[in-house]
Structures are given as structure tokens and as C-alpha cells.
View (cartoon, helix red, strand yellow):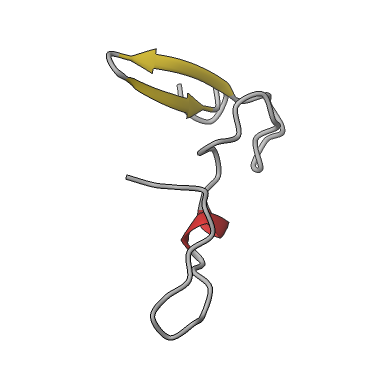
Length: 56
């Protein structure tokens, strides 16, 4: 899974993975590509966020 919590590796350096996320944890905010408001839905027991313009 993915988490938005700050990650620090065993070498003490911060992780960078969450900097590359375009929609995770950003429901209701603007898409970084097209500025459309991101939508969130539930699929079974999972939640997901997507851009209705970029991901159709």
C-alpha cells in the first residue's frame, strides 16, 4: 500500500515516493495535469481517487 506519512530510510534520508503521486490522498483538489477537480469513489472495501478528465 501507499501512505502519506513521512518516510525516513535506514540511512536517515527522507523518502521521495509520495512526491510522485498525482492523485493519492488529493480528493477534491485540482489535478496536477489539467486542473479538473479530483473525485473519490469506493470500490468494495477500497477507496480510490481519480481525475475524471485524464482517466476516463
